Length: 148
Image 1 (cartoon, rainbow, N blue to C red):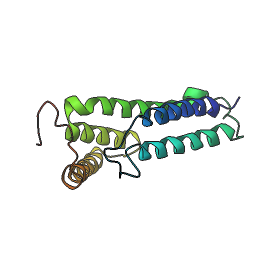
Image 2 (cartoon, rainbow, N blue to C red):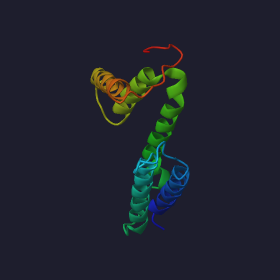
Image 3 (cartoon, helix red, strand yellow):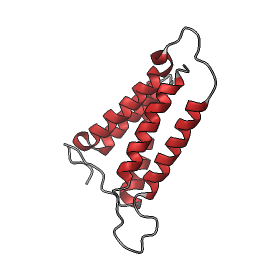
Image 4 (cartoon, rainbow, N blue to C red):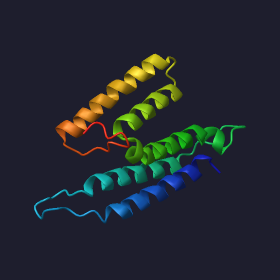
């Protein structure tokens, strides 16, 4: 059995649950044609298609490398995304995003801490300005309560 197939089954299950939950999103107005569920439907559909492609691939497993040897890093990366989401409310957007981006840049191959920190700081500021100032989305301030 191809070692990508269990991962494809997990991805398809997550996509199905994601789409199922997106069905509950309702628009605020009648004139809202697209509605708030359009983007989750698009993401869920894309994930479903990718899971099907992954399942259908005919390449065999690499000899001597098990499932976790091939998928350990992506699984850990997915777990770190979950931890980031859980840290958003208590820690706040700016601190949690900065820490997540700095550590993930380093973990994904950035050789120097200074560069990872500078990239994380710049990306955090740009993301905060875009979401808070341009889109006027209320981002979590965290325990510190800054910025507000």
